[in-house]
Structure formats: structure tokens, C-alpha cells
Length: 77
Image 1 (cartoon, one colour):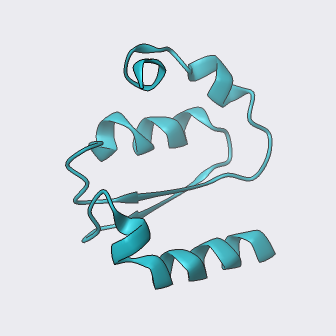
Image 2: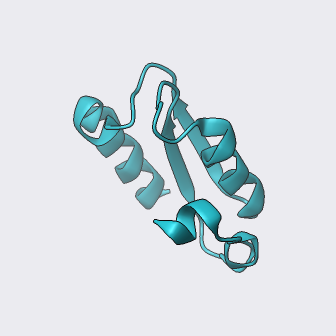
């Protein structure tokens, strides 16, 4: 947890060369999107950020069907 909140992972993100899909809930109060997903998307070259506007932190449960569809479509692309 300390690495996520205090660490500088920008160099690690720049080293990612694989296609990367970042999915984040627009109503995530635990990890605000502007401090997490948007910065990650900027740091990972060529990444794709998808925001589920109405999704909370636990979108793997609340939006599991949409998440599954998006993951499978991304993997197949």
C-alpha cells in the first residue's frame, strides 16, 4: 500500500510496452480518478482509459458484465 500511495512509479509505467486497458469507476471515492487512473493512462504510452461514469470502487462486482465484455473485447482486439 505504501508503494501505491507514496512511491514514484512513473518510470515503471513508462516501461510498459504491451497494450494496456485501464478501467476506472467515475464514482470511486477510495481512489479518485484524477489522482490514479488518469495519471496512469498518461504515463503508459498507448494505453486506453475507460471510465464507467456511474461505477464505484467495487466495479468488479457492480459492473461485472460490462467489465467482462470490455476485457474480452480488448483481449481479442
